[in-house]
Image 1 (cartoon, rainbow, N blue to C red):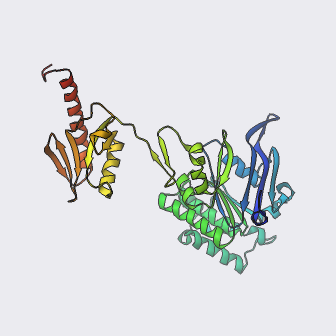
Image 2 (cartoon, rainbow, N blue to C red; image 1 turned 135 degrees about the vertical axis):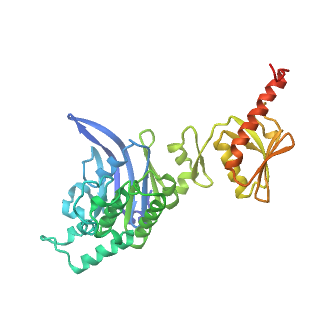
Image 3 (tube, helix red, strand yellow; image 1 turned 120 degrees about the vertical axis):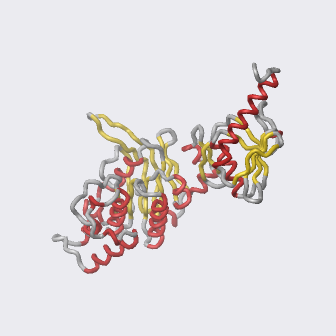
Length: 368
């Protein structure tokens, strides 16, 4: 049961919502029994696999398509009671596909966000121009303001549309994959910007994203959605500890670390090799990482060996002097300073020793 304080901070509520479409007079249900709320001053990330209904949910929440059943409440008022003009002062939207805008400058597009406040003629007042200028600065695209939209990259166009949504000055901003076309540093910068805006301006920012690890590090709340489990909401940390993140996203070949809230790839293992050195150093960890990627499991002693064919003849020594040494039957065969120079030789040496182990077991000579 929610407390009065929690209830008071709620700005959007979903009550037993079913989303979908009417196709040939029949309902096509995408998601059902959705119950959740968005609170003031929070950035919330909607996560889920492709085809789970994230975009459909977003479009339903902003009134672009009707719900099949259930309710969406904004400030406790049903969504369908708002006129388009009233809704434009409460929710601004950024969709993934913005490629249709042409022959307008970035500044002109951002200025469209002021349309709910500019009156019949759409004339910008001084306060509107200042807001447009601020939004261009906030998103970091001031230098693009005079560029036509068709001359911008996908990532730059996406930033323009986000600036336009901020310029609309609504208490709620909904975004569909806002970082889809951005490079890695820009993805992080955009997520941090949206989080700061939610806090500084007391906005409710709700976005769908595939940037799972960014969401787990930055979002105030996470909504997990898929067809099998439905909708689960909560703090990222709670969902990690409760095993919900694994439940929704873990697949064969993917490992989730609850301690760090991050995913990693589980590589197949074809062989093993002994690795010596200080396991706390970055060089040791990177050496082991490179071995795993090449289907080689690093072990520190023969007691850890899983394969009967593993031999102690081959060892890699990660030295304190900045070198990597490959030992073959007690003899140093390689001494290098870069991991790339030792990986190929390690593979070949391990294979050679495994072949020899098979020959020894079968009492074969080198000529047989």
